[in-house]
View (cartoon, one colour):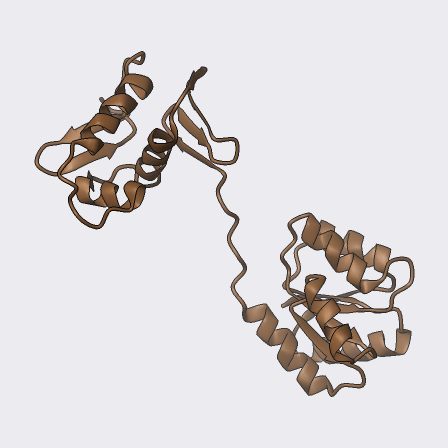
Length: 228
């Protein structure tokens, strides 16, 4: 694993660097909070080991800065401050684990390796794009080419579901469940009405339709075949 140690105590840092290298890990060291923040932001690490009491920038503020910029690298706090309130502050600042000094190296190593095995959260997509149709999920905007598509709330939700399942046939039952939260057949043509409205807005002014009816099955939103 690639580990960054941010520790101002020279003896403690040398001890940890030596032990982690002997355990087969790649370790880098920063001796103050500002240097550690810059290094953590500039490089990819599997785990950060952060002392709470650091010169230039304390450990809590350092981790808060990282989390505010979207950095999700697991953090193990080291600190002589071992009260419950201190540990809670460390975790609320964005730490994933908290180890109180003095500690056994074997325990630190086990905690670091456990953090390094955790799957990193995947970035959440904020846009969907099929061919020249693009949906901005945060801004709640839809465009096809250079044209803005004005959608009502349910139309937006229906199109989002179809874009998330692009290329798949969506049955009426599936759309009723995902868009209207119906787990029964309401015996209405609500799906057909909304699909018709979407076609008028998404496909009408364009040469290539994206929304297709699959007879006897449902509907499918798909990009045009490049070979056609």
